[in-house]
Image (tube, rainbow, N blue to C red; front, top):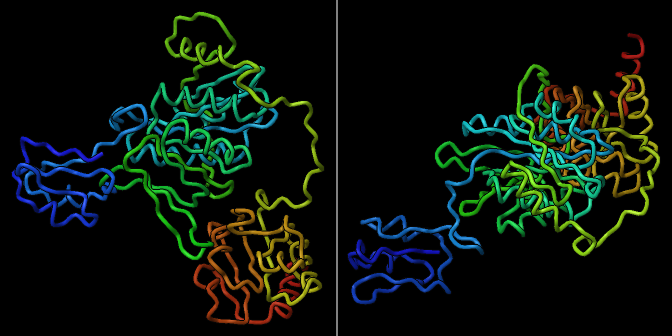
Length: 414
């Protein structure tokens, strides 16, 4: 809300004149605000010559003191008691953000019999790991996970919370942001800290991927982001790192000396059938996908320039010789030339191979968002003005149907 100090205000009227929403007026020679019109744009704060106006952050529980929030948190995700790669990626990125803020990195690990994975999180950069174990938490369910994690966040008040943009993360993130009365920026491709304000800069594709938008959450905490797997670079683990592990007791009714554990016991006492609206009857595993783009060291991708479904034969041959995987742009997937599991880009998979060979791909921003962090990019295209040449390390102007077979032949002889 907008607060005006009546003792400081001189009634000069500058804020009234400058307000773009006609939300301010003078009454008894003091500025007053109509909060139905005010958008908290901050113009009046900037122009007030006596600093009599300020914007107060508030939540549904009253005024939010942003100074109470500190630290960067990662909600680590696991399957069958093994960390997902995205958890290590996020902890690695959180370490960079926390170093800029001179704060700690904490990870939250939820499940059953998962505490052995805490050392892995510490190796990637976590200073603290909060482990919440209970049989009710063995498999992900919205109500139970949102309940215990939101209570933990409310208790510790982290400044930043990062989640993977996985199926579970995309379900959990909005639930947490609603409970915590804060914002959430989805599918970020870049995170940074503003040097002056110290707030999180959250960058993501916008308007169908035609531009990149940087979003901030100025007045609420925590600042929350989901990040797609494969976007952030995973650091080299240091297994000599030392960190703290707090085992948060989620099994019910036990009194403990720890204030944190008492808090969680209080949380857990509500984890009963009345609060959890779903039950897991069985987990059916599908056959593993034949394409593993996220872990591939080499990817050979084709776009419209391949010309037809049959045109992918030369792409597949080169990928086979190099021991890599076959990728594709969205355009050829939409045409039905190749299966969707091969798609790289904003609406496909994010990849970070050592070598990415883009064949007949123009380089639209949607595709670049999924592969531009590759170590080396080779582009082959007949159009020398194609956008892909702006980000590649090596570019070849020419017909891929002539060039790719030559590469295949050359590598076959090695």
